Image (cartoon, rainbow, N blue to C red):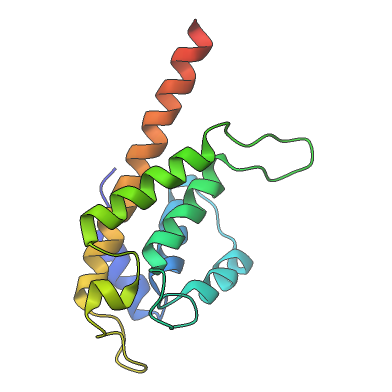
Length: 148
């Protein structure tokens, strides 16, 4: 499913950052809401506390994979390949954007108070689509293993 650009714009104008938007979009698809989780994601905004370090789209994507296939209760098991999935995302992200850090991707244009560059919307959109692709690929792989 393609990212709804209007929904992303709406969330950005409401003051949500990349990591938060990633999770909101993912939870929208699941028909869920969790304001506490979205609050927690605020810590990843702007490259972890607006430090310009690891991009919130990437960390949000890793969290979205976890939301979909991670362990959430004592009796639950996470997907056996969750770390492989996250590493696939990490490798793709760095190859696609040339860096995993906001500062490296945006050439230090993520200054305090300037909001998020338009480029961030494209990064979120691409990353969200890649997360969906990874989840689908490993879901299909798990189903084919079950059939054997």
